[in-house]
Length: 267
Image 1: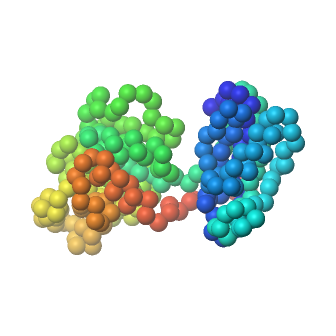
Image 2: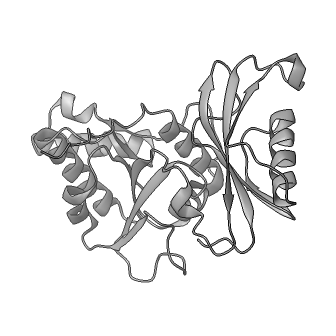
């Protein structure tokens, strides 16, 4: 992503105590606009002013410490360190941005709920692997960087290749497909135990029927306890696709953070 005009990239590089944004949050400040946020309020107001003064020819500190107390007009109580970097027109901005830790999320089904969920997920720290058995079901255009869209029939065949630590959401147009995907997920859990969540859209009646069939295939109560159905945070009663998508994504964000694989040092 090349910068169309000179800008200043502002990044949260350190934080202590109660602060509005996490380390890695960023904001790109141009003379005529900005993208992103480092937390709003007087903190962001001062950061924008510093950046624009630099774009107008002024000096620019590499890093500034901001105590979020009365002197800044904020009462968070923590401390934030912001890094300021000049970016010339034509330079690659994306190469300078911190890489966030993303939850691998596998969504089986590109129907009404799957489409809305994927659209909302673009703004969240999720790396989506989106699977459907039907050609032409995905929305037009290239998926975001790091996402994968896969046409796979039967879709259960995609389960063994999901990223370790994936949370899996099953919401296809076909109950037979749902059943085989859940079966494949439970088999993978028996073999590897590396899926963070297995959830399926549907009623308790649907899950009761699936339970009986899965038990007939030899799955135990311990196996079946790994499946969540219905999905979504409790207390959200609406059945509109957008309501379901928000409830389910909130549930995904509440999962424990994915464990990062240790970096292997050479030699």
